[in-house]
Image 1 (cartoon, rainbow, N blue to C red):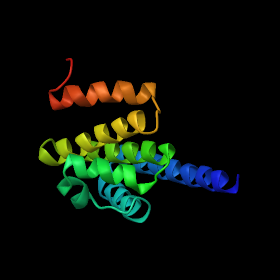
Image 2 (image 1 turned 90 degrees about the vertical axis):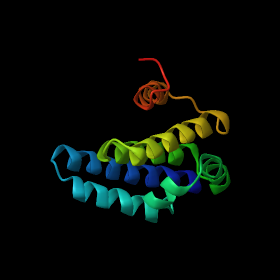
Image 3 (image 1 turned 60 degrees about the horizontal axis):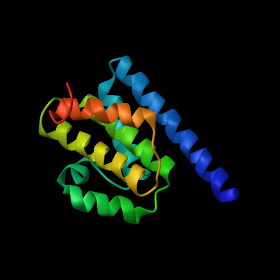
Image 4 (image 1 turned 60 degrees about the vertical axis):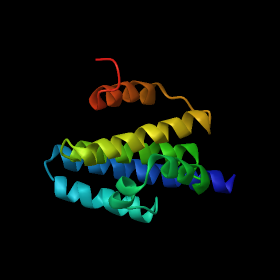
Length: 135
């Protein structure tokens, strides 16, 4: 029970941080938003933007399966990466980030058996952006 309470508290803190990042974006403070995103990726998720972009899809998926992240953590990682993609200019970096978001959705569905209507809708939007889905 204590472990679950700790996870819940961490998820609440990460959710507040994500809300802060989104507020910074709305307030046109994109540099600060990017800084907070990088900090969360490094400190909580143990990765960097460069690592994410350079890791091939199959290795990224293996890494997700081996980290032991709970579904809630993976969902927030996808949300943070999706927000990072919003900050990125169209091109290979944005495409790479969005592809990682799709891989996280796959891990949630296949490994953790978690299906979210929000993720289903967002997957469709991302596939359309990437040119792989219905228009």
